[in-house]
Image 1 (cartoon, chains in turn yellow, brown):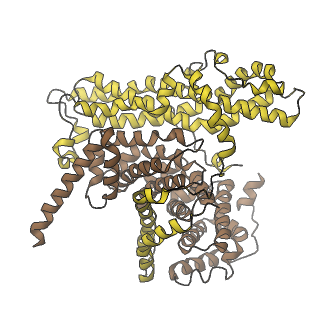
Image 2 (cartoon, one colour; image 1 turned 90 degrees about the horizontal axis):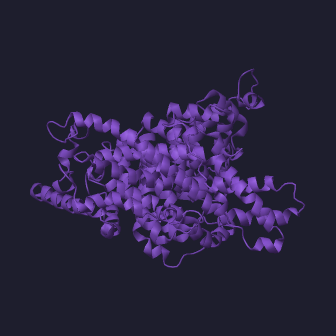
Image 3 (cartoon, chains in turn purple, yellow; image 1 turned 90 degrees about the vertical axis):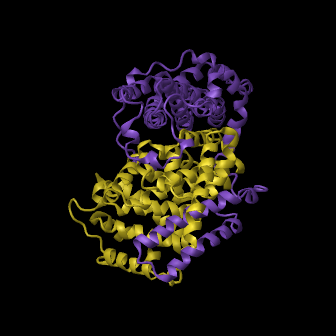
Length: 327
Length: 298
C-alpha cells in the first residue's frame, strides 16, 4: 500500500454537507476533447461515446473529498487573515469582498493542484473499465487512454477548481458574519477589535504598516484584489475549455514522459549564479535545523558545534559540486 | 560608545525593514523586497511580528505561493521562479520560528499551502530548492517542542510527505525531512501515531532502512545521526522495539559506519543504546497480542 493512504487522518468535521454539492458538470460532453489521432487508430467513435461518461464519473469520484479539504483550509486562512487585516474597516461590504476574492482563489488553487494526479488516475481507470469489452489490442487501447486522459485532464481540473471556488464563496460568509457580529458590539467606542489588538502586538507596528480606522488606501486594497489575477483563476474565468483544450496536448504529452525524473541530472545554464541568494538562505534552513538538534538534543560537544558552524560553507560547496543527488 | 551607536543603528535597520515590508504589498516592488528582506532577515529583530501584523503582507506571500502551483505539474518551474518563491518561504519561516507568530501561523493553516511543493517529484534543482525551503519552514515549526504543533502536522498528514523526501530527496533535504520525523517521534503523540498500526511503523522502518543502505554507498554523518535517533526513539515503544529486533539493518549492527561515527560520540552512544534495546534478545519473542506481526496477520 502507498504511504499516503496509511496516514490518512480521520476526516475533520466538514463545515458543509457533501450532499449539498451541486452536480458540478453541466453538459461536459460539449467540452471534452477527442483527439484526431483516435481516428487513425479507429477508436474515434468509441471514445466519443464514453469520454463524457468517464469524465463525469472520474470527477465525481474525487470531487467531494478535494473540495471539502480545500474549502476548509481556504476558509480558515481567509477568516484569520481578512479579519486581521480589516480589523479597522467600517464598511462591511469591503470586508466581504476581500474575503470572497481571497477564499475563491485559495480554495480554487488548492483544489486544482491537489486534484491533478488523483484525477489523472481516475480518468484513466474509468476509461479502461468503460472500454473493457472492446475488441482492441490492449497496448493500443492503453495508448489511446493515455492520450485522452492527458487531453482532458485540464478540463477536469477546471471543473473541480470551479466547484471548490463556488463552495468556498458560499461558506466564507457564515464564518465572517459570526466574527463581525462580535465586532459590531464594540462599535460604539471605535472600530477597534480588542481581540486583535488588545495584546499590544500593534504597539510595535510602525505607523505606515498599521491598519488605520476608516478605509484602506488604494494600494492596500489592491493586495486582495490581486487574488483575481492569479493564473488558474484567469483560465477558468475565460470561456475555458476551448482555450485550455487547444494548448493542453503540449503540456499533457510532456507530462506523460517528463513527470518522473527525466530531468534528473540536467544542468540548467546560469542557474547556480542566479540562485546565489536563495542558495544561502536554503543552506541556512538545513543548518538551522541541524543546529537545533545539536543544541537541544545533544550535549553538544565542541567537535559537533564546529561541524555545525562549518555546515553553511560546506553545503554551499556541496550544492555546486554534486550537481547533486540527481541520480 | 556602542550604547549610543546601537539603538540608532537598530532604528535605521528597522526603518528599512518597514519600508521593505511595505513594498511587499506592491506587486511591482515585491520581487526586490522579497530578495532584500530574506537576505537580511537575520539582521532585523522582530521581523516576524512585522510581517504578520502589517496589512496584506501574509496575503501577498500566499499569492506568491499559489501563483506557482500551475508550474508544478507538468514540472515547469524556472530557476527564477523557484528563487522568488523560496524568498517568500524564507519570510514565512521567520513567522514560523517566532514565538509571537507561530500559533497564528498555524491557526491560519498556512503550512498546508506548502504541502503541494513537498508532493512534487522532479529532481531538477529548482524543485529540489523548493522542497528544501518548504521543509525548512516545517523544520522551524518543530524546532520548539510543542505538542500542539506536532498534532497539527500529524493531522494534516505531514509524515508521508516527509517519507517521500527521505526516499528521493537530496542529502540536505533528506536530512531536514528526517530531522522533522525525529522531532515528531520525540513527542509522545508522534511516537504513538507512528506505532498505532503495523503499516505505519513498517512504512517508516522501510524508508529508514533504505536510507541506511544508501548511506553505506555515500556516507553522511549528519543524516546518519538523525536516522539513528529515529530508530532509538522508536525502540521506546515496546511493539516497535520488538519489530526492530528483526528489521533493524545489519549495517547498523556491524562495523559499516564506524568510521562515519568516529567523530561523533553522541551518535555512537545512541547507537549503543539502540543495539542494547533491540539486541537484548535477537530471537523474536512471540507473545499473544504482542508485536506488529500479530497485528499484520489480522
